[in-house]
Length: 372
Ligand code: OGA
Ligand code: NI
Image 1 (spheres, rainbow, N blue to C red):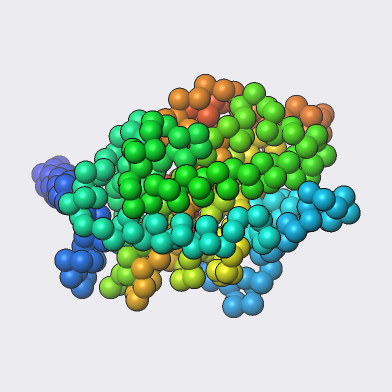
Image 2 (cartoon, rainbow, N blue to C red):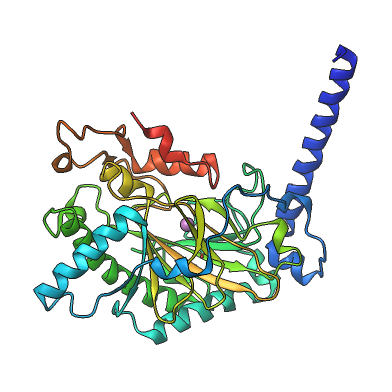
């Protein structure tokens, strides 16, 4: 290329870059999120939401039934049931990185009200929502669209609120009135379930029941949550509800509504996690893959955009401080290591990992950069 022509190309690229930046900024400044675009009547989605085609195919329709649904009934009372559940959780965590739980102890009415609460928050007047629109993670409650708006290469068709629900940062009044009570109630319920899950996960690694909870880094010390609202999308095939990614925390408990769209990548195929009433989806996060030296898998997943319905979900992330200030060290568990299984990951801290995860933006496999 002649140097003048090259210069012209670079100037054009910089202009495109400027255009994109001002488009992102303009969208951010509306504080109305994706829902604001939909309410404004968009029929074509802005190009900043365009995603490149994914190289992996969808699986045939029967494979979803393979994602284990594990019944927790009787797990605290009957040792034989417990053994069976422990071995199913082991298998699911090693192969799928995902499972669903039923009879998990959280009343159906709490799950329903949680979904309603999320809807109420996002569907309230935009002027009210604007007051809590922010990208400052040190605040007790924030709402925005695309936490990685300025670093991601393709935006997601969703809006999100985030807060630490256990223990609460700040006062209950910092949570929006329309979902305050249910967030607190849901959080306490999810913590109880999380304690059971971490006990079962410890046992499935042949460690003492309390091992993961009692570690200095405390997998059950806190829960941060992300409440998502996926508005209907006029051109769903051009974008994504959520980019493919793995979760950064130790463990995620996800409540999804009946709409569907969540998929996990398994053997290079996308498999639907079909909504089952009253179940919760559980998945291994990056930090648990790191702790278990690759034994448990933090698996990539995504959410498809859809044309007709709005969808809500809430992800509860265990052990991940939303302030990302924990300097507790994370490294592969010594008891799981041997001469044949040397550590595969460098030591890090929760704060360092969380900061790296955020900076890379969704979907960029941050865990790979911590391999020895
Ligand atoms: C997440 C996530 C899936 C969903 O919040 O990490 O993967 O169904 N959510 O919203
Ligand atoms: Ni996720």
